[in-house]
Length: 298
Image (cartoon, rainbow, N blue to C red; front, side):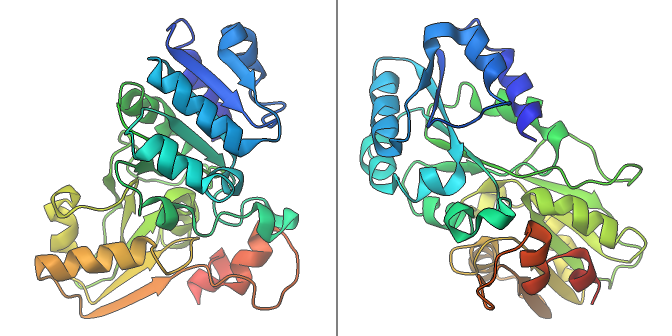
């Protein structure tokens, strides 16, 4: 997804307010932006807290900063600066966090993003965008380029399979990616890049599949069609590569209670962390957390 995002951002390279900051990361990816933006591309070095405060100053001067790093180096290492310098002042800074969930695999827990959107959902004025496919990027960037509030983009790899049939409409807070074959079949609500794997797993099954792309959730952002599917189904599954606390499952559960909608059965599949304390690939961690294709089929 990263390449698609960079290509979409390049269309705004001539906007004098557009600038990019990186914490000494993005090699073999951000060079097109660096070459196009000149002095509006800043390598802040391995000093993420300073980088966030610098972005706040640039935004206060009227610029539109985009800040790129591995996800935990943004939301965890510089949380205080995001909270105090950006969100309290409602500044239009966009954070790009690379490596959704277990995306950085063998790099281990220090590089994983299992608490990012739950953590950032607690901050006032913050809006979180979670694309499912590389094809989402043009519409996503179009939505946020003039969005005058703090933004976090959660990037993972595009996990869609060639030839899979799904709803390829533009990026939206919620999308129905696949219809079920029978009214009583279960509903799956998935967030982010795991949508591709979920669609592949259930392409010949009865599930209706929806994706969520924007957090935190609000009642008026939930489409009536999703609630209708839940009312007519036996089970609602929510699938996310994020810890349970503060995740999509908890946020959506609260919205359902406020709306008076109670599914017959409700199951959240989520990232439990590191039970066996071993290192491995993204798929290894997902398998140990019941989130890879084989475990989803079970």
